[in-house]
Length: 141
Image 1 (cartoon, rainbow, N blue to C red):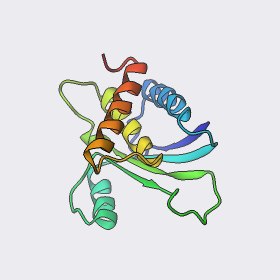
Image 2: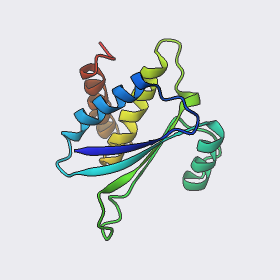
Image 3: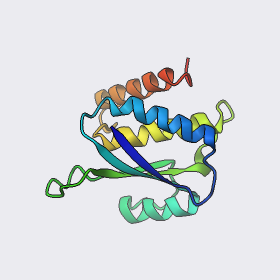
Image 4: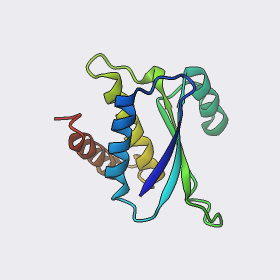
């Protein structure tokens, strides 16, 4: 089972959104048999731009960044990483704020589990799983 800690200094995570995060977390927990912990940090454009520039050398904001710790095999911990979601980019006139935040949450968590979209086939797999999970949460038809 996955456990996560939400760091929300901007106070944008409502009870409804917390509930959706927990439901998504439970669904994704089935993909990994180990007990794991990760941090979820809610950031704004300025904060995530600094992180993006520092770690990816891209000097602009992004919607979500994940830092997986599974690459550091010598570390013995249940902490699998951190997800940073930019709430200011979770806007799309076609979707609710909750939809966008949960979509980014799922996307970031899949990255922590080793999924990526660097190659076309891997992208198809990851995005198909994202959509499946969003459908199971009744957020996508």
